[in-house]
Image (cartoon, rainbow, N blue to C red; front, side):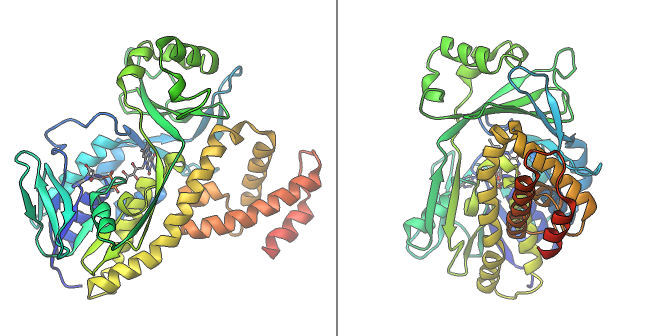
Length: 444
Ligand code: FAD
């Protein structure tokens, strides 16, 4: 496609990366962001503080030429450190090769860096405190200036909305009957808690993602570069063990004392933090179509927000950006390009949405289950023996960006069937039947 003016709504994670990719092609990009400029103001409280970055996100950042600057922000997490109630913590490695790790990255630092990278291009203009507000009857997007409340029209050029899970552009398109939206709210909410470093040192093993799986709920913690950790409590909204039941300091104290006794002492100001930090909602957004009138495209969370349990929302949003960039080589018009983007991406984002929900069960429950652990060990062994035929699903999603999410879901299901057959045949034995495994894998 020949270079031309484009509007991007949202300068979160995907918006500025997309601006970089478009600017590299000579496009003139105008970005409107509702919040302030993170290069001059501090991050808004209540948004997740750090994120797991994996191979798909890294590949997209490399494609945009920004990885050299991202690398210093990354802390390797080699596996899940599982904290059981009455046992010492145990590391379950994510993969089996040294490079099979995921990385904790601070959202605010990554956001700032991507905005700085976008701003380096003379054809990129960034406007802050400007919110995409509504579509008028002609399909033109209106923007609102935060300070004055003044409404004005966005330029009449193709608009890509990367305005996040609560996308105002998506709502406008939906109100105008141009897209259908289904939002599936999870019945579990989350709250973040900071685990401070003591005398500059981490109080938890720093190269791991820590999990306190408690069946009906869980707590996780990811490392930050200053030695602190950001913990997130995921808990049902209603019910006996729920956010609704934690209305008094005594109830909060009781939950942490009985269920998370080894975690509680790491946060001396637990009650103050619990009181002060917001309770966030989680959900999956299904939108169809993702584009309207050849003029507007939804991308990233705006099109397909997912629950965070596979650590893939940002990775998928970055992958969206590089897929869109690749399609610019194949199309001269926006409408077919937007349609091709949706055709390529939808099966994949639907697949990761499903796997993200399934991973919640895995993180809060299965990691304690003997069958799960045995099958996981066997899966790693089968991968060693048949590396081009059997790759554990988690590894396909996190370490193999050349395998699409949809393909990972499909192959994962076939592999699980084999593991179930082997488990049934083993009847409690530690080893699986090697002949049966070989037969099944070759037939798969
Ligand atoms: P966002 O990053 O949300 O950016 C949207 C931007 O648009 C924001 O800057 C916002 O201010 C702006 N905006 C909103 N409305 C308007 C408007 N009307 N006009 C103009 N601008 C607007 N993903 C991972 O890959 N790994 C993880 O470990 C991970 N952990 C997570 C943990 C939690 C608790 C949550 C909630 C999410 C997590 N995610 C994770 C998902 C990840 O945060 C999102 O998928 C990612 O931020 C999507 O990027 P985006 O650019 O589409 O949206």
